[in-house]
Image (cartoon, rainbow, N blue to C red; front, side, top):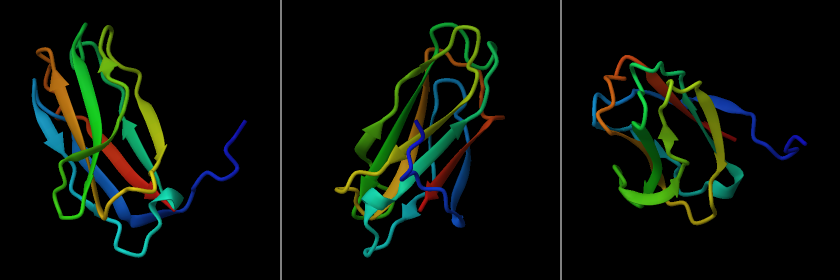
Length: 132
């Protein structure tokens, strides 16, 4: 059953693209500034990870994705952690939609960590959006 309360309004000012990491690397998106008057529980975060082939994400290599927040820019406090993506014959790609908790602070970003000798996936791009 579809979520009748799902957020669907997109704003280009709240869309970020970020290249995925190189082998055993870490990347962090730029920050979203939610401002001080936004009720975060009325906002959804959408993260799109593209399809990756078996060379890019081989067997037992992983991508760990963490949503971070804080009261100041460039936050590092973990807010949400997505399921670890483990390669075998690659990854089919996926879209993750998360409703932000009410205790989400003003600044928000996403950290993506590749581990296990992962091939260079920096030619692929993740897309992050806030939906209102």
